[in-house]
Length: 100
Picture 1 (cartoon, rainbow, N blue to C red):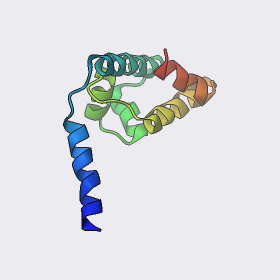
Picture 2: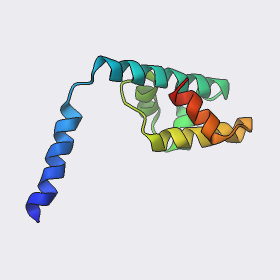
Picture 3: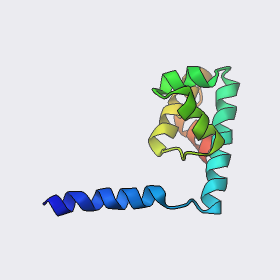
């Protein structure tokens, strides 16, 4: 059983160290830019939105620059915050962030 626990950790470590492909970098940067645009449209700075998401300003900055990839869960949380201010559906906001 100890071996079973060790394997996912090794796999996770390997995947975390894998270099990003050019398309992954481009996609993360584009999604991050759209996240920043949504935040700016609400008149929030990174610290304000980060606090609402339970993130530091520094981590939100990494997402917006595309240095860290956004998870689907985080996109959903951002979409709910934006939709509460705009009246749009969270699905529409999430689609705009992810697809453009």
